[in-house]
Amino acid sequence: MDAKIAKLKEWVDASDNIVFFGGAGVSTESGIPDFRSVDGLYNQQYKYPPETILSHTFFMSEPEEFFRFYRAKMLALDAEPNAAHLKLAEWERIGKCRAVITQNIDGLHQKAGSREVLELHGSVLRNYCMRCHKPYDVRDIAAGQGVPKCTCGGMIKPDVVLYEESLDSYTINKSVEYIRNADILIIGGTSLAVYPAAGLINYYRGSKLVLVNKSETPADRSADLVIHAPIGEVFSQL
Ligand code: CNA
Image 1 (cartoon, rainbow, N blue to C red):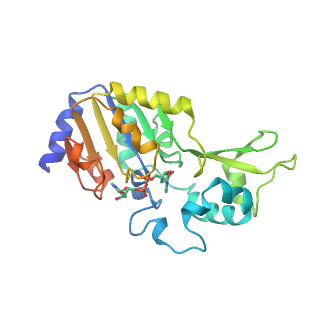
Image 2 (spheres, rainbow, N blue to C red):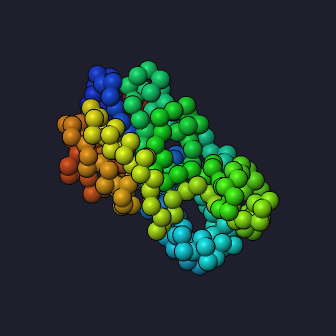
Image 3 (tube, protein in one colour):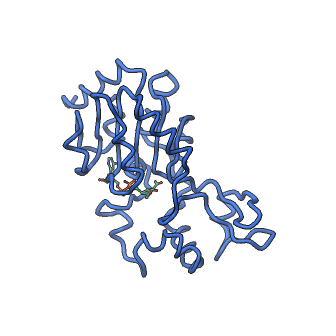
């Protein structure tokens, strides 16, 4: 076993207060593309850049185009959890992992069995009418065509945080509390480029800040352990 993975395993084995902070890279090994990798969504060609399509302004002004992109690229309902999701769920079950804080919207941590999952950017699995707030199943959104409409005539919006929208303050406060009190903070599969989510890691006060990411991140220099490798492969060895 690689010396860095052995070190991480030693820390994990001795801890009952691990907090995980992750992003889209956690789900690439489940077949869901991230944003910033070479094969990520930002490097594929669309009429508009993904930041534009996934903004509140675009959603309200061009909902047809939004849902065309959203159904094709953001919904992956057949994806299954990979070794990283499964290991985190196991750690929670045996009392090691206190919380998973995720920027992902795919629901795979819960599918793997994690219960304390703080979804900073919401979830594609929840959908509500913007007028009467009636909930809709994601399968209704996936199977439909054009702009999904409620029986009342209102537009249905996925419960995901679009660019220009603010994050839920309860979720942020709870995330800060977990991070501030964590023994080990493992950051994985995130470019740490999207704020305010990325700023939450600055609340960590411990001495075991771990980064598991394929590429370099702005936090590499302040981390106590940096592993540049696919997270599923790393976690399957822990
Ligand atoms: P990002 O900016 O696309 O960064 C992903 C990072 O993960 C990059 O640094 C990659 O090098 C790294 N990476 C890719 N695959 C792996 C892997 N197997 N192991 C380790 N590292 C890997 O994504 P962020 O999450 O940082 O950006 C935040 C956005 C992306 C959030 O708002 C998400 O909602 C959004 N997003 C989510 C999903 C999802 O829910 N699965 C998919 C695509 C985008």
